[in-house]
Amino acid sequence: MGIKIRITALAISILIISGCSNNSSQPDVEMEHSDMNQHMEEMHDMMEGHMSHDEVVPLNDSTGENELKIPAMLEPDNEEGIVYTVKAQKGQTEIFNGIETNTYGYNGSFLGPMLHFEKGDKVKIRTINELDEETTFHWHGLEVSGEADGGPHDALQPGEEKVIEFEVTQEASTLWFHPHPHGKTAEQVYNGLAGLIYIEDDNSKSLGLPNDYGKNDIPLIFQDRIFDDKHELNYNAAMNDDGTVGETLLINGTLNPKLTVNQEKVRLRLLNGSNARNYTFKLNTGDSFVQIATDGGFLNAPVTLNEVTLTPSERAEIIIDFSQFNAENDLALINEDGYVLLPFEISDQNGVNSEIPGELNDFTLTEEEKNLPVTKKVELFGMMDMVEINGKKFDPERIDFTQQQGVTEVWEIYNKPDMMGGMIHPFHVHGAQFKIISRDGEAPPQNERGWKDSFSIKPDETVKIAIQFKHKGVYMFHCHILEHEDNGMMGQVKVE
Ligand SMILES: [Cu+2]
Image 1 (cartoon, rainbow, N blue to C red):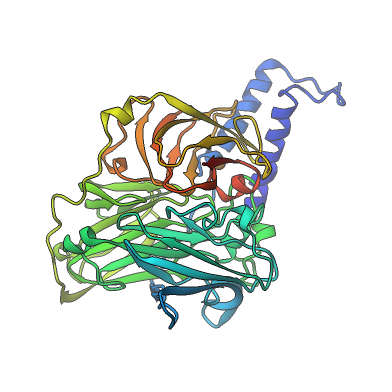
Image 2 (image 1 turned 90 degrees about the vertical axis):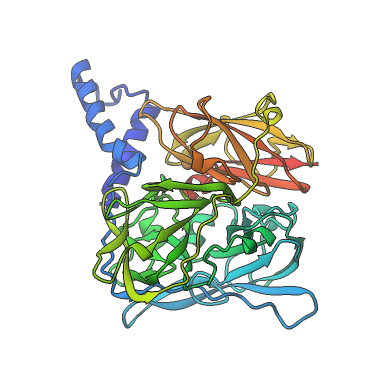
């Protein structure tokens, strides 16, 4: 199915390049205008699903036969200061019962540990590349200097190591880390390189939110994959230039997961760690839940929702109140098409059941910030491998923008449609948390009124953000469909 779609998309891209005219080398093939229109409509219908990631490759329902794995919390090395070691390595992982699959991981064979920081920590991380190819260590959402950010300029060759240092200056949030080597990000993430970062601060500790890691504070890393008939992750076979999607969902690397919970409020930290798939998360019962945090911190107040959509790299923290349910209830997290992502097994145990405070944060978007002139314009365009930003593909030698450290600027990001309509791109900027000012001139939805480092942008939509970098260096901004990023949908801002 994937291959067929790819060929169709390729045919369409050829049509686009050739201006949708008939191929002049076949003069005897005459296509009437109406035929052509119908032909284009059919192709448009076919592409529609593909480009909007709708149901092209449906997900298999989770059977719930395996308890969800929880990433281990990484202990600091036994040294002075807070020093961690993070190694990128290859390994084999039993994803399917009794079968070893070749995978990549950090400090293990698949995915990575959770790094737990407190605001104010002075952290050193010894990063080591034990792969047989170059890689980088990028801290997604972390406000660090360009040198520590782990963009494509910071490649470690096989066997190399590098110590990075930074102070944690940002507020409580759920961030993550993954590789970012030039042209190889998608494949390395696909093979399993991704880990979590939790930041805590005085505020997060005072709120009384569920925070028992693995019990009522649960990270959920959503990643869809294609396994071949040998149960291997064969990236080259699976790869789609418009974003690799698969029918098999892994959560925290667990196939067919279920989560056992007590009858209490449970905090789920959702991370879309997929290369390209978007997810709209809902409960199968239609019940609501509350969102308490965005990518980079708490919302000012909990927002009650029936569903939340995350594009690749976005996070949301939600709280589900399982005290309303009992063991008889058939409850699951599902996606927009009703596929079962994560069934819940509700135990007969009562939990802590804390109250969710009505006030969580003091995030503000000032009038001054809203009224700043737009000083940087970013135009996203294209699909497949014909993707670009402001008409250009990524060039590691080219600096696209400069910005002063500590100065807030307004960037305007526009997703320019193409003749096929266009597609959603998730836009991410390194090294900073920013504020969404508006979407098409309107205030963003309640659950985007908090710190963000990534957001979705629909075709023909214009999003304005207020962004300030706390540190200096060269940072990437790019589409977080990892194949688009690898295909050059990326630029660089130099902060001086
Ligand atoms: Cu994109």
